[in-house]
Length: 239
Length: 265
Image (cartoon, rainbow over all chains, first blue to last red; front, side, top):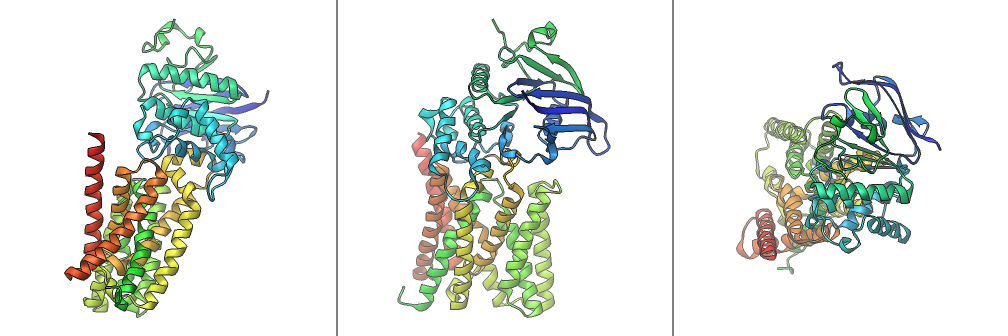
């Protein structure tokens, strides 16, 4: 088993301001499904940006698959679901067109998708259970279905690491739980390493084996069952 | 109408612009930067004025100014963290002010300037048509080749960037295409209305199409139909061609909005 993400002694401050992350050590091994949670402003997004190589830590080192994260050479192996507000959910696109956009890095930028690429797109759509809606306009789908389409887009690149930023924001609790189960199944079947970042973790608490809480630094790192009772997300009641 | 040489020229040049403007405009409208054409139009005005001042082709100087301005907006937006609307405002007012100053310095507040401001499609020469044809073909071929990549960025720019897609280069390409479109279109509909042909057919198509590709192709069809219908109306009613073309495009938006409302009802 190889190390996918490795942060050592990572600190970060914006333009000389106070540190938003201090002395963070985090390692994610191949095949893990890790939830990274914490309050808004706690440094989750900064951690995610450093982890993906989009920002360089002011102290410490960040590595992806053994390479410096900011110079990572195999970016097509990364799948990323951005926050919903940053996605073009109101563009006049079908589910198939959205998911097809996930083949840009791996399948080439020029011309139409080839037959093999189209088959990969179709499989990603099937994997998230949207076959019946493949040619439906995205705008006609529910928030949860739209998120499934964008998860399929991230999967269409056949990533080794899938990073999701607030995937359940703006989605009702029932759909959040369904998305969490879907992610757990995809993680298991596709053997993809998953890092799930969210300010709430109730929806994934039952499907992950490891939870990392971030508040300026890492304040908890372990199985959700070991989380102090008062820290559980009350918005999700689990059996 | 088409037995007249100048009308055949007008239809030929207008057809290129009718396809190119919405083809490029599609990607700026979907990224909520619909007003970029206006901002670039004002930069092109400064380019025209500079051409007058130094005595070289105003179309050439407008092309350079428009492409440079468009790339500058993209750079301000992407690299300097300037909000898209602020970058546009900076370009809009600076371009207009520079144009006014340069035109006054050249002493050219005349009919030639009006042809660029309001369009003069009925005076298109064979040289103009050749330039429009070449730049239009290059622009359309670029969009056709990069369609899937540009559409992917509209849908998820961050995801594409993380996966290693050259997002910055593609955004600069779109910005340069906007500049080319403005420079090519200004003789047809005029600098003041050039953005309308980039935006209105796209809005109309987005109201009724059910897919991105369908919306893109319909926008091209509506752009072409706007030019043909606008030119025909202007010929028989003796009206300004640029304004007539844009009013037809606006009518398509109203009709598409009404159609979409009826479909939902």
